[in-house]
Length: 372
Image 1 (cartoon, helix red, strand yellow):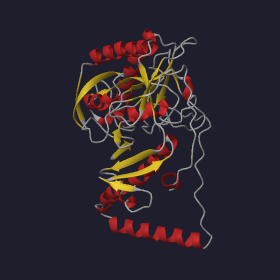
Image 2: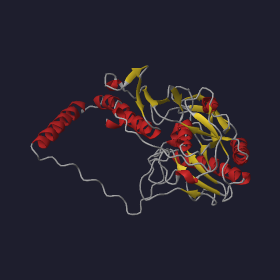
Image 3: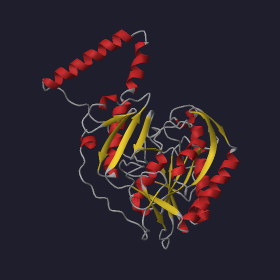
């Protein structure tokens, strides 16, 4: 819990390709905005970060769950949207495009199939794990970020709307934010703007805080598990057109970088199936409207604190699993075995006999592609 309750001073060195004018406050946003004109003398390098819930032609949640019968269909929808965006980015003047996984389906392979991806684009692969939202190696080397297939935030009534994971809302300096805005403030640390986005109509409404972003609404949300998609060809034509315009705007100095400075108030709201009430009386935590909030010195600490609280909130999901188990014919035997196993671990640990299970060896050829 030290990541939540302590705040060691952290200095963030901000690197910009060109000097930026005095920061201006975004309308109602808990950050400042800075106009960015990238140095394009060595080309224009764009990162495409994708999720998988905001795709054109998509209305079934099964298409973004790895292991479901429709996941392969979702992969095709995903790469189709990404390729349409890549086409527009290059048409607008991009000279290099990289793609990173921001979805984390659980697939050991990238959600984007290499055999279907535009051959001009490169997938971000690393030998060690990295956080595609916050710790992507080479952060400062990109001129801009385009996000594709994103979703609205928890409470927005969008298709699969959430922030980070099920039942979680993220509150930055008093304002609930989307994952797209999280990407914006993360890359804003080095003066890199988000210039393009796509998703449903509820996300379009959420992103009124980022009016410079060229956004494409690919479908209308009917509920958290259904949509009315636009015709795919029509949606992808707009993906290409607006991706082109996004790069042209970037080169013309119309993009904005989002910056935050300490102290930062970071809150995590937990709604079913998550729960954070265990933190209600913890010193250093304020509690209001199912939201636990702490104050830290930097965005790095804010992100770490939020992820720690998200992990705690997610433990409540086990109550749902427990309810399912209790309905099974052998529920009493399972509960008895569970209690006995807990007792054995306790006795073994106190007696010096307990040893942690050995870590499973990783495959020699394993490559990390972002969220997993």
